Amino acid sequence: MISQLKIIIRLFLAFFLCLFLPASCIDKLDFVGDTQEGQLVIYGLLTNIVERQVVNVSRTSAFGLGPTGVQNAEVSLLTSSGERYSYILRGIGEYVLEGFGASEDESYAIEVTVDQKVYRSRFEKMPKMLAEDVLSFEFKNEPFRTESPESVFTVYSETTLPSSQDPIYLRWMLEETYIWPLTYLPGTGFPPPPPPPCFISDVIEPNRLNLFDGSSTNTRKGNFVLGKRKVDNSFLYPFFVSVKQLSINREAYEYWGKIRIVVNNRGSLFDTPPAPVFGNISNVEDREETVLGYFEVAKTKVTRIYTTRADVPFYLVDPCQYFPNKPDDSYASECKSCEARAQGRRWTNDAPVWWKFD
Image 1: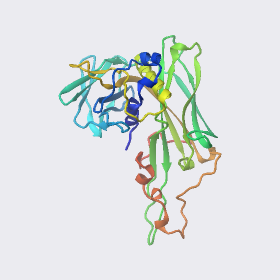
Image 2: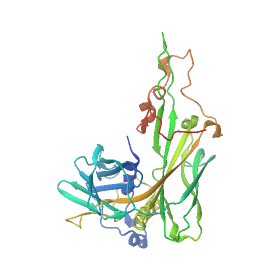
Image 3: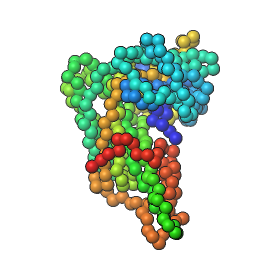
């Protein structure tokens, strides 16, 4: 299953040949050399929410292929006061620290040891301010991934910045979660209890980088398109969008901004970068080694919005509607299995604690 952070790792593999870019853009991006197969990629996000904190460690693969997870790393979170917390390997290249939240009074860094080489980020301090997001959505026909009009679901935010004059830099990430009831096939004899429903989650537009520089505007409000996705039968039942607002520091904002420039110029997120953007992680004994990735510490809040079938102005077909005379083996696998429906996305039979709607 591809986690949200694994998808973000691909942002570091988003760059095409820098020679095709204007010279001024090359200077601005601080390109260094060519990316080689096997270079280390480290991405970590630490938030103030007490949750599962994740660091992904991988190596670049051949051109056109995604990174390969590193399984033998030792990953630690360091604090400016001298504490050290160990991450545990939980997936392919995914290292987690359970039940931890960052404090405004501390600075944090990550340390990753791979093949007896030590890599460390700069210490980062969490920003103190957040903005207010008021979410809305819209269903309409418009060109999205094709030139022809499609039925598209769009999420918007009206964002109000804090009254402070201190600079604020924001990034948003979107995740969908929808419920998918499996088809109740009673069979013969005394009917068994109906199967539990599936709760399926995925990132909305993982290739979109939503960034905002609050220091460059005199207005305290902004209206943003945060994400789009094609309308399908996922909207037959309650469909939640969780918007994670990350308040980041100026260096992290500039880093993601440089990546967005290259992505927008060349258009693809899933190719090995021939020329990396500098991050904040390095080999402590060999500063000349190019290490891709970034460790960011973000003050975070989550805002949610949901839709029901009544909100959707398009006709949706339920492929799993039960008919008494329909043979059980004629139902598609997605009607009988959460795993088949999820197709690699994260899923569970347990409703999230926030799964509440009118």
